[in-house]
Amino acid sequence: MQELETLTRLVCNVAREAGSYIRKEREGFSADKVERKHAHDYVSYVDKGSERQIVEALRRLLPEAGFITEEGLATHTDEQMLWVVDPLDGTTNFIHGFAPYAVSIALMQGHRILVGVVYDVCADECFSAWLGGGAYVNGQPIHVGCSAIGDALLCLQLPYNSDAYKPVIQHLISRFYGNVGSIRMIGSAAMALCYVAAGRLDAYAERYIGQWDYMAGALIVSEAGGRVTDYAGADDFTQGDCVVATNGVVHADLLEAVKRTLPTP
Image 1 (cartoon, rainbow, N blue to C red):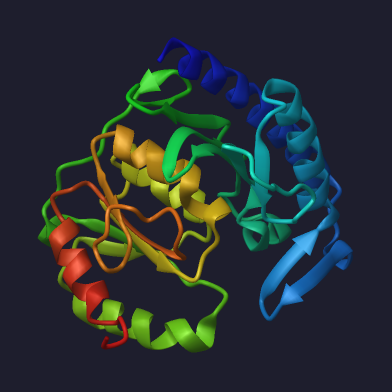
Image 2: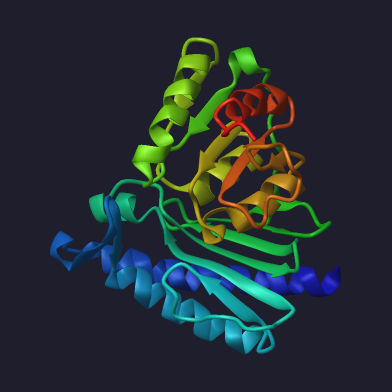
């Protein structure tokens, strides 16, 4: 436990340093420096520079660990522990100067998430958790909210795979718009999860995302007293591409809705 707590604090420093780099680069950033990975899916030299910096720092912290990273600048073979890194979650937000965007770093061992750190570059907030240790923002404990579905603030994101997800989001909007407190879309999976953990949102759901998008935030939600599953309701969500994260109170309502969007077996 003590080792994980110490490691988490060190990872927070790594995330903050990467965030400082991102913040500095945003000052003179130009959209002509953006590359298109897929339709509506962008990357810039800032994503790559942040990832390079993070990977180098994490290798010094834990040389025996491998990597799963969004930009693929580091890989893994048969290592028992893996760093899961999104060097800039919310790239489209970053390009437009629209908050939030964040650095997300998790450490996994098998299907267990040991450490999760998400640094909100715009708000200078570092969310963190280690397995069994609770969840924090800038060192202060956080906990999920307690709103029931009728008063809940939901985050229903729009992933890049628009053709596949369009019928899903249409169903979710139809089900919840007018039946909950309100709905938001913020453009960063990592930050949506942290907002659930801090009680700023009551629930979040998204599909067709990478492990780097949600692994750190998922641990933070769990350690803040929330519940995280995949769209089918499985507690082991670590190997998939979808996540439902809530305050626990509204989980059954949101899960029932997303299950209806899954293909019939």
